[in-house]
Length: 464
Ligand code: DOR
Ligand code: ZN
Image (cartoon, rainbow, N blue to C red):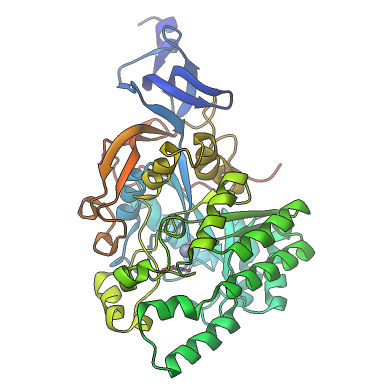
């Protein structure tokens, strides 16, 4: 083989598709070599490859990034583990996920963080970043966690932590401490923003009155609890200089707070999740504890405001908040809602649900790519290595067929929590046909091909 020919060889060639580029959709192909995008061009200007994928009629997007998952590993592997969770990610079209720290031991110390990297690296099929948990108890350990490569910090504005200690900041003083530390370390801080006191008060009142039905969960965490906590977070973020990532927003009040903060040029990014966009409070009547999520499902006005914010740019990212639990745990809440854990496994349905709205003309494909690839890449300081299809970027891509119509069958999902999955029987239009991680096809037509350990831990890049 001549040297000239060698130079022209690619490891993988995607051809005959429409490539989503910063300059619009290009009828072209993508060549990947040694894990990187080598060429974006029309034939015959593409190199040859022994492995070619025919993407006729399909769109080649930057590799999608899910900025919010709970793969439960180590510690709660009966719910999910990094292999099954990452298979679900690959099946759902995601090439990279960012995993939350509330596993066991929680990722709040250097040793727990290292243990988690080792476990996850040995199992994962897609690339991953990690959040480090922070709270009043571990402020002094935050710099070590940053040095270990944490992509961001995460804290809960709770009184009692959801897993172990070290994740909570229920008062303003502690919130300031962790935000100031995150700011010094130049990492964003993600917050679960719901006001702990309002929740405790409403919950006790509801319990005292004998309520244990599914809707009581929604009432126990009223919209004001979110709006108030978001306002506090924004104020503290401003005074501490932190870059704030507001997780899973659900209410109009919170959206309006973010809108005003963005007008004042605060460093804030906002997220919402598929369940808040596609389900409402009344769905609790039918789905019961399976639809118990924190924050809870909301009413129509709130949902409409989320859709407006997706379109107009107030919301920056879609996270699935993939939060698997066991069926037995969820079933405990069918009689008494308080007994069930909150969370639903959504990573495999997030993209098809969103593509359905693109097909309906509610959301543009450009916005979807910003929400599910470009902005998450920016949040974790991975852009433009990721989040855009361009020569020299990582060869991680998601190919979608916008015209594919199908019915969601939860028994076909990869997550261990498929028995608790929502959206069974929903008709969707649009799905991922290939998930490609640094030049390796990890999913083809819904079948996960990637092997355990193929994915990598992606350390946060230093800010320049
Ligand atoms: O619904 C939720 N589930 N909300 C959270 O904040 C935590 C998550 C989980 O870990 O199960
Ligand atoms: Zn979460």
